[in-house]
Length: 141
Image 1 (spheres, rainbow, N blue to C red):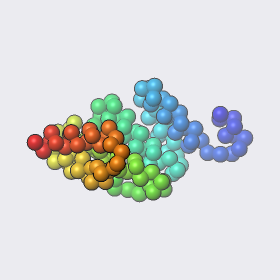
Image 2: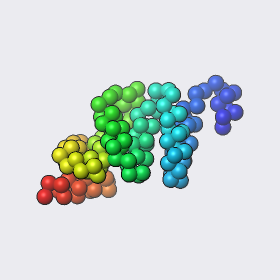
Image 3: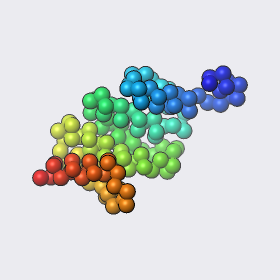
Image 4: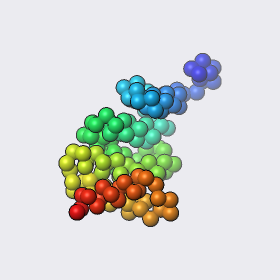
């Protein structure tokens, strides 16, 4: 694949992002983080890569890093921001998950509420929506 990229002169960010996704699917998180970070060399995969990195931190139990990533996503605008609005919405949920695991109940509650305000009325009741409702009800009980 790299030979093809060399011949066409195209950037490698797409390849690195894809390799990060493959490594992540195989739970090879160190390799996935390496590839996702390489994909950040250009702006086109910034948001998707940051989002994937944040989810890896959640999977690894590194909630402080995850919280920082999702807060960054929610506070900044990336070149692909408008194309990936579903990731922005989900970032609220994952920020809530990180905060909840850090014992930051108020921040978690706010993040889950923000998520549900955006997606809670979806006609498609995704598992992430159900989980956010359950987590929010436990935190506010």
